[in-house]
Length: 355
Length: 184
Image 1 (tube, helix red, strand yellow):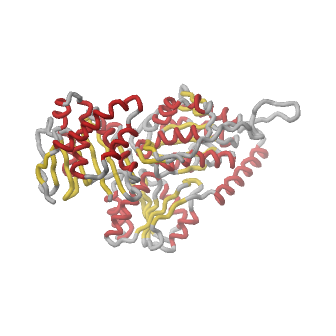
Image 2 (cartoon, rainbow over the protein chains, first blue to last red):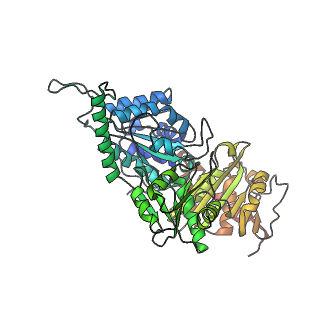
């Protein structure tokens, strides 16, 4: 039986990556997620499982190493923070367009540009609405604890291989830097088998396998896009994940993910002490977004406050979900500032209850 | 029980590791814990602080504005965090380098001259363990054996020969902490 250990969120991702049987990690250090590659370097995964750990010369190189590794059917991952993830967008689009599985971790920091190294959630649009070019979607998982940082690594790989689609863990600097207790799953062996679509070298008994995102024939490219959309619909039908906290008697609702959802839990306790019945809806998959489940809450509550460390990005999906049947507003801080639980309660009163 | 603590001082004083040992002590007794350091620009100028939460229940926000206890180890931290102690809460400080002593009248204040004591003991690195001992004397949160186990978990094995001297420092802290003013 594994026992609890104390670890930073970033370190938990790294340890979970080794235990999930990752074949290769390719990355380039950037605050606030450098502990991922630092932990891996110290843990010597090549001695534990034979896992490759490679510090690339840039984020652009790292994502293309992922593309190659994924094409060979390997379990590959990278991690970075906002500006580094922006650099990777071309490669991410190619990987999605080639229907390859991989795991991406974005420990978000304040932007735009080089921004700041403090926590933020302002990459929601980039993660959930594209980021790179073309009609593609990432599956986006949003952990809210160090335990989930660890657990979502293997969940991420499972989903990536099930749907042959890149999966992103979108977290932030606070969850990356904080320590909580965490229990790891036992070591999984690295897979010895290759998926049948992997480019592992042609044998005489079969046709060669070609992995590409290019098809110059528009009708074939349209058919491929239609196939992708069928896959995305299947994911939307089957993979929506969320958590509802104290929603049964709720008259108002916070909608928040990641670090914001943790702060909102405290705000919820404070508001309830004042007699305000507020619940918390926490999307765990940011894509596919829990539209239906939030729409159901619209019939019950008098208003919803989307709380994000951004200028208001997820709030657009909350509004889409409820289709103007209930009041929705946004509260957030930007540029690396984390809102306090007190100011969130105040925002609920002013924007939703009194507004 | 939920205890919300800020530990603040200079980088190199062992602020972060003291918080980690406290968290591991809690883990040893089956508690929920969180450890949230200030990082980045807040660290510039040599200050370091960490928010530690120890609780019987699942912890909501790891980031706080007010605290049950502030452990303050330099003047900048006094200026920043004295006002953040909840009324009726606890402030522990080391008098070394403090030019403006705490002035609140609605909180419990204890002083521990750990820097001076660590020098006397000939082991300045155990400074933070003296402070930890003082805190445990006032709050009596955990059995000493859980704290020692926590210490073992926090230290890499190559430093395990240092455990006896750290244990001695914790005991010394229990002895030398002094009450300045109490409200309850």
